[in-house]
Amino acid sequence: MSQNHHYDAVVLGGGTAGELVAAGLARAGRDVALVESRLVGGESPYFSCVPSKSLLLSARRGETWEMALARRDELAGHRDDEPAVARMAEDGVTVLRGRGRVLEPGRVEVDGAVHGFGDLVVCTGSEPVIPPVEGLADVPLWTSAEALSVPDLPRRLVILGGGPVGCELAQVYAAFGSQVAVVESSGRLLTAEAPFAGEVLADALRRMGVDLRLGAAVGDVERKDVGVRLWLTDGGTLDADRVLVAAGRRPRVEDLGLEHLGVTVTPGEGIPVDETCQVPSSTGGVWAAGDVTGIARTTHAARYQAQVALSNILGRRREADYRAIPRVVYTSPTVYSVGISPRQAGELRIDLLTAGYDLAATARAAVEADERGRVELYADRSRGLLVGAAAAGLYAEEWMSEIALAIRAETPLSLLADVVHAFPTYGEAVEAPLRELAGGLRDGTCEEDPR
Ligand SMILES: Cc1cc2nc3c(=O)[nH]c(=O)nc-3n(C[C@H](O)[C@H](O)[C@H](O)COP(=O)(O)OP(=O)(O)OC[C@H]3O[C@@H](n4cnc5c(N)ncnc54)[C@H](O)[C@@H]3O)c2cc1C
Ligand SMILES: NC(=O)c1ccc[n+]([C@@H]2O[C@H](COP(=O)([O-])OP(=O)(O)OC[C@H]3O[C@@H](n4cnc5c(N)ncnc54)[C@H](O)[C@@H]3O)[C@@H](O)[C@H]2O)c1
Image (cartoon, rainbow, N blue to C red; front, top):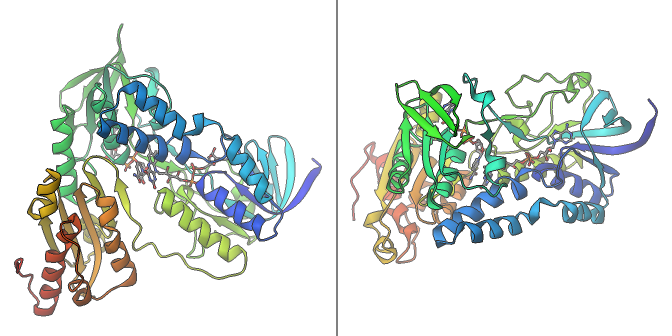
């Protein structure tokens, strides 16, 4: 096959990470092509972050489903990527529409046309995992992409998975009147995070009428004359008009031809990257950023990795540091986690010192008439440093940012314990646990709240 054009760099995948790398390289004078098989912009603006946050906000405001849909679709640009394509063109990026696949070192095929490249940046994102449940393939399924782009409001919705996607969408659909059940095979919601966070959220969802089936898996699914019946491993059954699969996502690494560059990929696992976002390869010049690396799987992490890759491709060495990337579930109340979780600490054998505080004890909770939630801070006893935190509470995504900074900057606990917060804010809730941790590390004990 003859080659069309040689680019300094080809970026595979035009989502959050791919757009940022391609635009940055083009602005620096490189000849860049961005290959995108679906919509330039990727998941975040059209199928994930933006529509889900829009619907959650509409639910909190008490809007009708019709108003919420109109707002969601407006914010998602009606899933038209022409403005994004135009922005790429303004930056000097050539957009190649189609599926990209590496043919050999320095050559990539995009829907039959061959192009040359110097550097290759893989930003192909992730895809939903469909669990191997008997009968599931024979019933009409939604993944989050359908749930966030179609206009239907199912009367009875069963969600498989109680992670961030399952919890956010359970709250959306319950708020607008669907009868929602969540089946979560582990014993609790948000199983990767601090146990109290899942409990606060479970309480909020149950109060909205969500039927939580925790510790049960779906054993079998059968299509009925009307809807679907699901048999659970705990002996229970659920009837639904729609099943939404929210059972995790996996990096999109297959059929990219990376083996031609000496890159080993394992289905279900991220493309390996070093701290500069470079992929070990036999040719050099291979980079990856975003969900495809399987490292942090959020839009802000995709942007961070894209900036790191961009800097290194341009010859300015920069290393990624993942110690304080926030993980936020935008339900009401919000669940915010950052750094090491208690579960990870157990896996890594880190001896954690924990201090917590109920938000109900803040004056702000009384003012807002919302006393739900708690904050917990985790220090590494051997290093004497704050290494993780979790909070469930109103606006936690905003007032917990200082804790991310403290973890990233390794700010001494004695200094953090001296920081003054405005009254009356939820942010005051971190003061007592910070003092408790500082005191506990000094004395080898963890003191009671001295207030
Ligand atoms: C329901 C939901 C809600 C979420 N909410 C949030 C949130 O509130 N905040 C947050 O930070 N994160 C959120 N996330 C995560 C966030 O969406 C992702 O982390 C982010 O979109 C990853 O960006 P990316 O650039 O890595 O991949 P993507 O945005 O997925 O882009 C990858 C692109 O590559 C293209 N592609 C793949 N293979 C090829 C190929 N061979 N050739 C050409 N093109 C290809 C795809 O079509 C896609 O457009 C949410 C995720 C979900 C599912
Ligand atoms: N606000 C945000 O930043 C945000 C929001 C949503 C999603 N995300 C990203 O999207 C990714 C995917 O989220 P997710 O919630 O789909 O995945 P997840 O892996 O976090 O959670 C999936 C859950 O499904 C459960 N599960 C798996 N198979 C099951 C089965 N057969 N039956 C019942 N339960 C089953 C698992 O135990 C797990 O708790 C996350 O890694 C996250 O980074 C981010």
